[in-house]
Length: 103
Image (cartoon, rainbow, N blue to C red; front, side, top):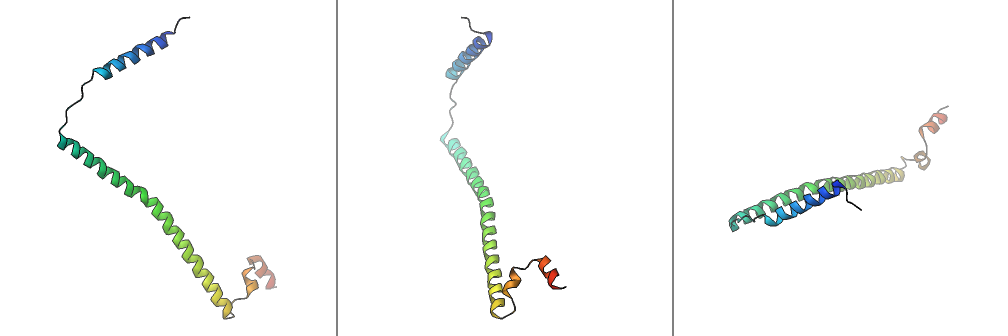
């Protein structure tokens, strides 16, 4: 059973890449340069974390607005019902029902 030329080429390429990887030399960097690079990485990471929090902040603010609005409407309806300015059946009435009552 013979191997296809594509498999042979892939194996040759893989061996060449392995050889090149083993033969490479590691550059010598000063400790100051390494510290500066790490400081830059940390600064960029912190900046990304701040931008990732923005959508979460928007959703939290939206939830607070919905809650405050619901409390305001509920308290307004309660106040109107206690002062006789609101009939309980009016809450269940639709626009079509109000047209029927006018006739």
